[in-house]
Structures are given as C-alpha cells and as structure tokens.
Length: 410
Ligand code: AMP
Image (tube, rainbow, N blue to C red; front, side, top):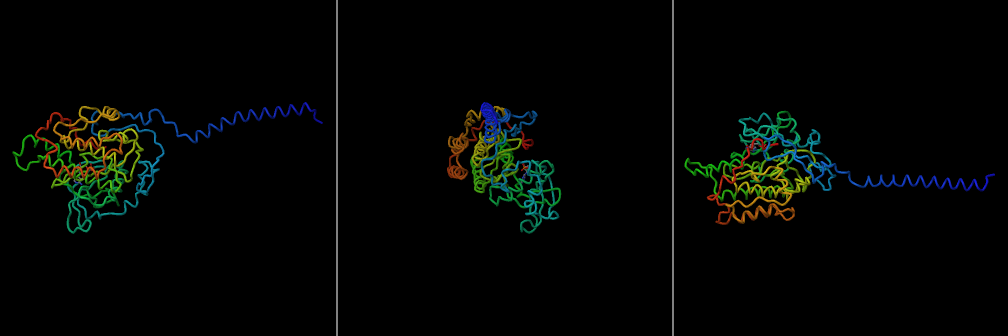
C-alpha cells in the first residue's frame, strides 16, 4: 500500500511535468499558427519599395529597362486571362497544351502565303511584307505583315500576342489580326499591313521636313492638326482596347503604326494581357519612361496605367518623337516619378493639351481620365480651329534626345 507522502510526491511530479510540457508546447503552437497566417517575409532586395535597376550594357538605353522584381505576392485579384489562370507565371505559358486552342484556330494555309521583304525587327524576330491569297474571304492577293517567331526563347510572348490578337476584333485605330501559320515552323502571325512605319519614326522624320519645308515635294512635314489627330486616333484605338478589357502595357509612339492616309493604329501586343488588372510576376525588360508609379513600384497594371503611358505618348507627339525625360537616366526617372516629378510643359504646347498630359500623370490612378474621356477631349480639340501645338515655335535643340529604336525592343 502506498504511503500518503508518496502519493503527494507523484501528484507534484505530474503537475510539474504537465506544466513544463505546456510551457514548451504553447509557444511552439503559437509560432506555427503565426507562420501559417502571416505572409512570407519579403527578402530585402525584393521589397517592392526597393526596386533596383539591373546592370544593363551602356548601349541598352533604349526605352526598356530590366528590373529586379519584387517578391511575388499571391494575386489578390481575378486575372481574367486566357484560361483565367491567375496562378500561372509568365514563363510557364510556353506549353503547347496551354495554347493548343490558340494555335489551331485562325490557321492560314502556308502554301497561300508568299514572304517578301523584311519590314522591321520585333520582339520575336523579323516582320516581313507578304502576299496572302484568299485571306479572310478576300479573293485574290492581300498584302499583309507576317511576324515570324525566330527566337525560340520568345515563343511565350509570341503565343501571348497571338492570344490577345484573337480577342481583338476590328477597329480602324488598331492593327487587325488576319490569321496565323503555327502548324509547323517557321511560325507567323499575319497582320494588316500598315505602310507608313511607326509613329515615332514619322514624328522624327517630320523634324527635318519641318526645318526644310516642302522644297522637295511630297513632304512628310506634319501640321499641328495632324499631331492632334494622331493623339485622337490613338485615344480611339485605346478606348476600343479598354472596352475589350485588354491592357496594352507598352503604349508608346514606337508601337503605333501610321497608314498611308495618316491614320494611327495601335500595334505590338507582345506585352498585352486580357483582364481588368495584371500583376507582373517575372523578370523582364520594362519601358520605364512610359510606366506609371504603381507599375514601376508595385507591378500593378490597369487601364489607368495605360492612360499614364498615353500621357507620355502625348508628350512624344508634341516634341516630335523626343525621348521622354530628356537628360535623365532611367534611375533618375524612377526616383523622380516616385517623388512626384512630372515633365514640364514644352513651351510650344498649349495649356489645354498639357493639362491632358498632367491628368494622365495623376499620382492616384482613379484620378486619371479614362480613354473614352480622352477621346472626347481630343475630339473637341480637333473641332477647334486653334493649334494646340505651335510648331513654328518648336525648338528642336531642346528636345534633341532621340534614342534609336532598333534596340527599343526587348
Ligand atoms: P513589332 O514586333 O510589332 O515591334 O514590329 C517591328 C517592326 O516591324 C515595326 O517597327 C514596323 O516597322 C514593322 N511592322 C510591324 N507590324 C507591322 C504591320 N502590321 N505593318 C507594317 N509594318 C509592321
């Protein structure tokens, strides 16, 4: 029979052991619960407030910049992408399976396509002028632009552009999609052929014409009204895209083409995405000078960040194709934009036109106008007899920064 003292000792020992166990386990359980609830710690060099410019060669001052991207948070929005797969990383979309539907529809018979001369060089490879027979029910030959996928590393971007193009529909201010040849290599995207080259080169070419007038006939010089019309055309094209919930994400004069009758058409959907909002996840080269603060520092893209870029495009039009933020490095542009710096009013630009730019550059994206509003405002300027851009007082030397465009592609 146990002695009453032994029983007390056993009870004391049991209580002490239980106490120790509780003391050890409670903090462990607390730590585990906290870890599950709280987001992962952001590594210092991936902090969204700590975006760094990557080292790029000195010859890469081209409108784009590689960024060390911030740590990727789980997306808190619904990305209505191709397959509504918000969980897919950009570089995961290479699989043939994901794009099987995109690849098989809109196929154009390769034997009805005749590739002619090269028109330019883009993100994936060369763009050729080509003849297409009986394309989209048009009998006979149609001149098209054929974008070839040359670099296999660019196949994701190529098929993304194809996917966005197929959603487009047609609008006079957006380059039309006509079909694709993606059954076997070489792969081609077939687009409406736009003969006048990029808006950026049209603006820059017009500088010399501006200086020397119409001496040699067939002048490419542009009138203030032409310039306002370009801005209006782009606003109409972007209005259409935004109504389709397509984000361009790389709107700039280098990505707008000009037709023979001087109609601007928004082009180059290599960067575009479908949806109301998009969160950048991968490391990529970025058009820093055209980017809104929320895209630069929080990787967030909405139609309103396209509106910011439209404001920069307006500035490019007014300065006949100058490089935005003249004299500033991309690092300085990023710091400046973060601190509220905005490009000054070019002296030959009317207050009303400049106030449109400034509205596009509102810090808070909801204060920026939408594209339909921009379209209406520019329509009103078009109706007016007044010149909103006074080319007679354009000082070419003040806007001499013209970085070349071939490397402006990623
Ligand atoms: P991108 O890959 O869209 O940047 O195109 C590269 C270059 O090819 C452009 O700068 C144009 O010179 C030319 N290009 C692209 N698309 C077309 C088109 N639809 N019509 C005529 N030229 C084009």
